Length: 225
Image (cartoon, rainbow, N blue to C red; front, side):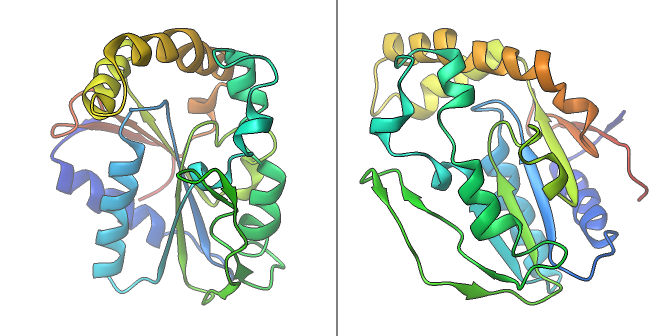
């Protein structure tokens, strides 16, 4: 395991992206629990890659949710519902990951759902250059429906209890501490434990980022650099 600065971590990740050899866009998964720091890391990596001249497609699992009416057949606080009923993996593969993958035509859509309005989207189809990079963040990205769609797999790891406090800070303007803690302790954290038990995502990751202290991260690479 290596320790270093945030900039050193981002430099290593950018090098890992650059080391991927493919005739199609490089699809990068940034997986991890809610409030682990996935979105921040993905945004920062996007900036670094663009500074290095890469064309980056930035997308997130939050834009591939089922509409709210379909997401809670097992109840709002069901961990199984969080894992099995929340994300439209078929649409994600069909409109984004497969078009950017081997044999794809590189014509993609980066979203199918608007969380703010709870509306289904059909944005214009965009064409990606062959040397583009997809930086995609979200939960459960190593699950069987998605695991073979990624060219580089990053897992952002942090203590699950720590994610509760981060969520309270992040969401306190829109939700009470009690509501946030209930959602995390009854739905999100048990769903992550289910994911770890059934998929063992860190075993599939090319890079594990230990993000308990975001400004002083540690990381482990299982791919050459």
